[in-house]
Image 1 (cartoon, rainbow, N blue to C red):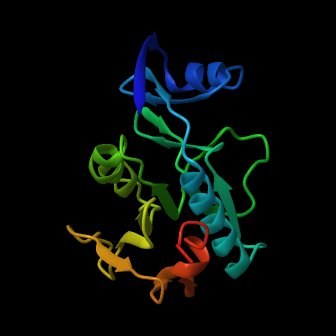
Image 2 (cartoon, rainbow, N blue to C red):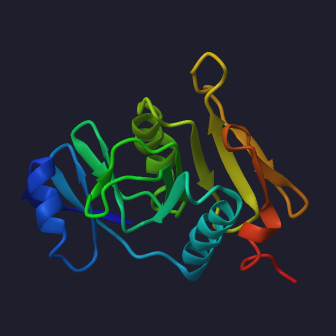
Length: 187
């Protein structure tokens, strides 16, 4: 669940303010939005996805971040569950300006955002090659990847099942869904 609080900031003011706050917040249309905490499944899935990506990419070339690191999109600031950007950025930056991959783990209260405004915002970033949404309750991911013409498909590819794998073409890596969703798969 997200809760709008009656605070308005510019992006620079928000990034300074949020560093001193407890809890999670995003900036949408100049307004501060408080983000609810996630479930154990949510936390496990995004952590395992981040670890799986980090284990497969060249760490001298790429950096994987989780929900504590922001992405600036127009006038908004989001904190995706997982993001990947080129290595070599300034260590004290408060946000990424050119992520190549962004992933969200969908919560019941965030489905409309993850498949709606966040999808449009993230896919508007010129640097972004992949947008992923992961389910919390089953081994299932929705994948949008830019094609050779630089366009995202209007509908995502759905990858599901314990035997399925996520193929990230622009990174030339493959991740078994069982590795990401192991914590929620019923034995």
